[in-house]
Length: 180
Image 1 (cartoon, helix red, strand yellow):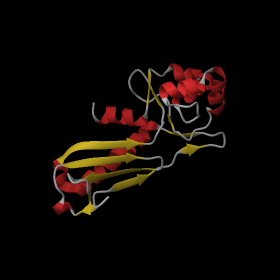
Image 2 (cartoon, one colour):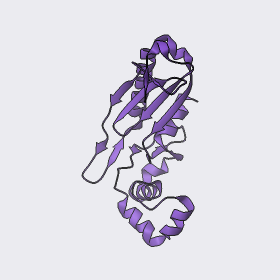
Image 3 (tube, helix red, strand yellow):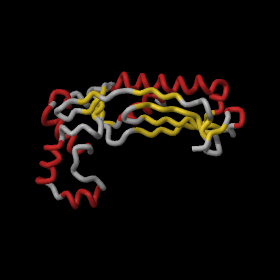
Image 4 (cartoon, one colour):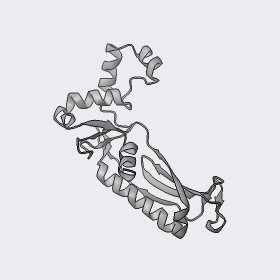
């Protein structure tokens, strides 16, 4: 992506947010698709993993880190922050988060790399027609996708899943909090 000096940035601006599996990055992009130099804020974070295949993190600290990184980019942008007219948001794939009736997280964020549901993906393959499911949904039975994760959670953590009113990706949860 080409860079442009803040004084030469063509308004309006877009705030670009990238919530990846190891860091949160935020920067401003001008109307010509150029990154505004000096506006990138990035903060790294670690996913909790285990030998059993866990890959998860608590949602509240991740949300706080996201807000902190957004604030950092806006501070770097200074008065030009008032020229932001849109926000683009991308996030890690296949994250799963259970939300309680109050909208607060009832589970950790389970990442695509969490493989504890691999036996449940195998069970789905035995019980259902994977080719038909793939044709209908575009989704294979795999531990990174929600069907296997939901089955695993229901099987291994029934009390926790009973507290869940709805399932969400982390990005949808974060956007719901940022833009109520």
